[in-house]
Image (cartoon, helix red, strand yellow):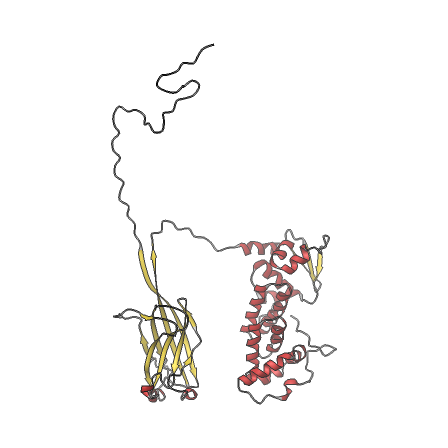
Length: 425
């Protein structure tokens, strides 16, 4: 047997390679040349200051009736949003300053939300209603401002003119027509940000997940449940319905589910409505009503929205319920508002209810609505609403409320028991 040899100056190398210690560089006969200096690093950025612009059109109807409200008192527009802040137009029929003795009208734009040192440009325009285009314009836009944009320090700060127009001249001018004034206001909120160099550009498409899920429905593949509605059959996918609706989730996967259930019969719903409901659950959008029903009228669209609102509440589809509520608010009309009001009460749609009550309570609408079929259904199904309606009528100043508001007259559209029947699609 041999004995391994040992080197005097280093560790044993028997059976493995020798690596020099990391701290000890390998021996070299001559020093390495120095590395060249790194090139200087250059960077750049750009500060961008610009305005975010928005406009509001304010109609002041009944100018002659607004006169005399008092110096310093104003008529305000609805607030509007520009650049992340709320704004409002203030019109003073008797002027803002007591020293002018109501000889001038005043016009201002005010910051209507919380804010500190909000810098902005403004333009106030009184529209010439003769069509000659001789508008009265005060503007910051398109010209150099010695002091820069105007700064509003806090909520309620405003910019404008105490002596915007002499009242005697205004009342004989083309700016006043049919006792109305038209005011346009443009606000440009100053915003700044710093931009660095972009070394990449990767376009990312919009999400198309709803397209993929929607094609599951249109393809009819891999369905595992069928719904029967008005003798029409609608195949669907349990997992999609359960993901979208807690009601379907409990019905299809809850502890009381029937494992052998292949078909569910839906009562109290029409086939076009259920088809629209399925479309929304898969595509997350409302279907084309004309394609669905073959009709293109506001009445059909409103009727579908009424049915969908009830269906959405039934299956706890909050987004569909809000979309239906929005559609009904937009299409409120004499012949449908009573049914819509009853639905709003039954399904707790508070904004829709308010819109309907205000519409019905207006003097020009009240009598016509009371003559519709839906008003009879409203009296029978939601009698408490009549009290609220009377309160709204009083608010708009119609004190001569017809006693037939509580009429027992039976109108068309009832069943054999005198109950109102919801129109079919």
